[in-house]
Image 1 (cartoon, rainbow, N blue to C red):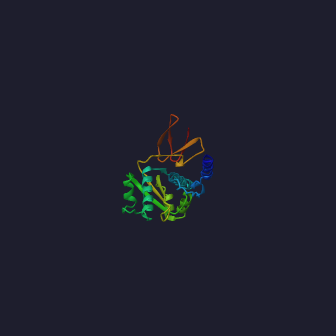
Image 2 (cartoon, rainbow, N blue to C red):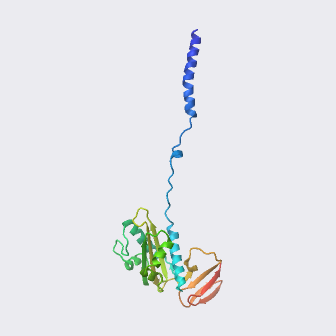
Image 3 (cartoon, rainbow, N blue to C red):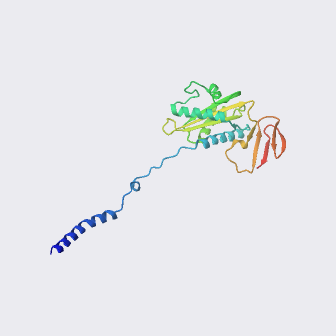
Length: 227
């Protein structure tokens, strides 16, 4: 009788505990990320592509009126990028930076020396290269820089800072040096679908080596070089 009673008590304890643990394990576990809305952050524009596109668009506009293309210059680009960054970080918009430098003392600090002429365009708030070049084209002062026949080189600076006043900051630095590179390849465009590459001479009597032949180019003659 005692053993039978103990068996009944054992079964009672078993059924009181087992169902609870089984159901607890069989309940689906909630994963927090499954029920949390995902916020998609907008990525900042690609600065290098935007800068290259500004140079390309500038040369397209210069070509329309028969002007020589501008070639990329790394020192001018460094100076332009620095000014764009400085304006975005210190919340100002001017050709004179917070160190008190205008373009003339600033460019040599970035290695652009022995120049014959220099110039600068700045802009703020335009979201794309097309928009900023269009804005400069509709401004008489900026247009003069874009179409100055005495310039042969250019660097572009672009900075996008979401929390800043203007968000987008653009700088074009122009220049010409007597000892600058005399050649412009493919009008300094970012891309081409052509199998031939156009090479232009910025100086008279420039000698170019192409396919083991020496060719004297007159100013603005085009040379197609097979890849």
